[in-house]
Image (spheres, rainbow, N blue to C red):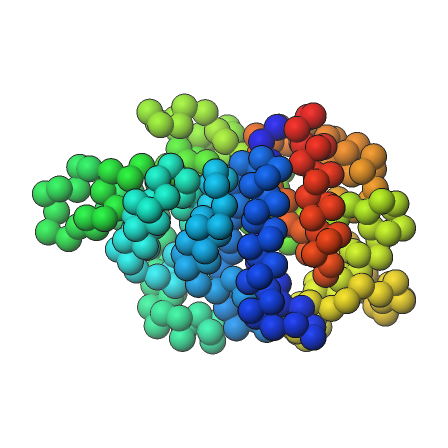
Length: 328
C-alpha cells in the first residue's frame, strides 16, 4: 500500500510561525526516511493556527531538505491563482527537483469568503471556470504548447503529475472526465467519500498516462502507545474542529483530557460527523480499522494527516503508520 503525508504546518500556542517551519523540516525528513511516497502541503489563508499559506514556497523548502520523497500541493486552491503563474511556479520547482514534484489542484478557497475576495477579486468567476483552468495548466505543461502566444517556458515538458482534490462528488465528476488521479479530503469532510469514489471509479475515462482510476484518501491518524494515550493527543485535534464549529479559530492547543467534557450533545454529533475519517488508538487498533477502511473503498494510496501537538509523538505516529501501511 502506498502511503503519504499531508501537512498544514500547524502553529502551536506559545510557539511561533518560525517554530512551525522548523518542525515542518523535521517532519518531512522523517517521512523521507520512512519511505513515504509523497509529502503534500495544503493551502489555507487567514488562519492563525495554519502556516501553509505560500504552498509552492514551502514545497521548495521541503524538497531542498529531503532526498527522494515526492513533494506536492495538497492542494493549490486554483481559483485563488492564475493558471499561468501556477504553471511557472511548479515548472520552476520541477526543473530544480526533477521527477519529485506533484501538482494537486482544488476548487475551494481554503479560507473564508472575504479573504477569498482579497486573494483574487475574480474568485467566483474562477470557481466556475475551474475545469477550463485545469486544462490551461495542462496545456502550459505540454510540449505541444510551442505555437501558443502565451507560454510557460520553464514548465513545458516537465511532466508534472496533476491530481484533482475534493470533498464531494462534484470533484469526482471532473477527475473521472479528465482521467486524473483523485484525492479525497476525508480527514475533514468524509460524508461523501463512498459516493465520490464510486462515481470516479465507474466513470473514469482512461488516458495514455493514467490507464486506471487512482484513489487517494486523506485521513487523520493519531497512534499512541495505548488507546488512552492516543485519546489524549487526539484532544488537540478535536479542539481544532470544535473551534471551527464555534467560529473560534486559534493556534493549535496542547492536549487535555478534560476537554472531552467541554462540548454539547449537538456539538458532539457534529464532531463525530466531521471526524469520521480518523483513526485513533494504539498500533493494533489503528491497523485493524485502517485495513478495513482501505478494503472497503479499494483505495490505492492512504494519506496521513497527523494533527498532534507534540513533535515527538507525531514522529512516533508516523513510524507506526508507515509500518502498518507497508504491510497492507
